[in-house]
Length: 250
Image 1: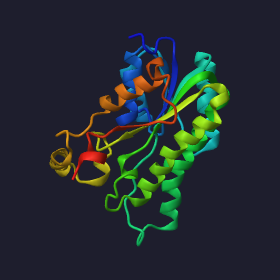
Image 2: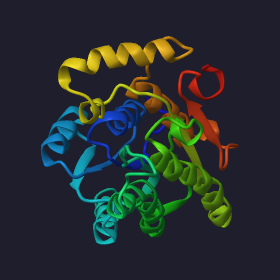
Image 3: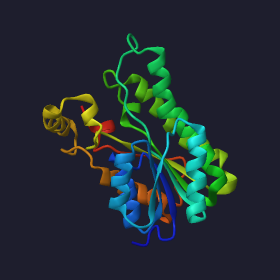
C-alpha cells in the first residue's frame, strides 16, 4: 500500500483494459490521480470502481487543447503530477496495399503523435524526479499480419522513451516503456464477433510460451514498479511483459 503513497498519477486510456489495470494497481499502491478517456460511460464506471482519490476526465488525447486541460485540471485538483502513463492507443489492421492515407493519419495520431504531446503537455505540471511510463506493444518486434502500421507506431514509442529520458536528464524525470503482448482487454470486441472471442483467446494462449494471455493486472504491477523508487536506476528502458512472445515464441 505504500510504494506510491502521496503520489499523483495521470493515466490516459485509464477507463478500461490495460489503462484501468494500471489505475487499479496504482490505487492499491497508495496513489491518487486522474484517469482519462473519451467514453463517458466507461469513465464513470471506472471512477466508481476506483473510488475516492481518483477523478475521471473526459478528453481526446489527439486534441492538444484537451491534453492541456487534463493536466491542468489534475494539477489544480491534487497540487502536482508525479506519474504519467501515456497508455491511450488502439490497434489498426490493414496491409500496405489497402491502408488509406486517412487511416494512416488516424493510426499515427492516436498511437504516436498523441504520446509525444501527452508528455509535452504534462511536463509543466510534473515534479522533478517524476516517472513517465509509455506503453509499447510486442507488435513493434514481431511482424504480425496486418499490424505493420500499428507496430511501426509502437516501435517509435519505444524509441521515444530513450529520447525523452535524454531530454529530461536535468529534471531527473525517468521515462521507461512497458511492452505488453496479447492481453485480455475489451479490444477483442473490435476484431471478432462476440461468440468467437473465447476461442480466439484460447488460441492465443496456446501460442504463448507462458501458456496464457496477459491480464491488465500483469501490466499494472509492472507499472507500479516503474512508477516507484524501486526502479530508480532504470532510464529509457523497455520491459517486455508479453509472456515470452517476443523472444521465445516459435
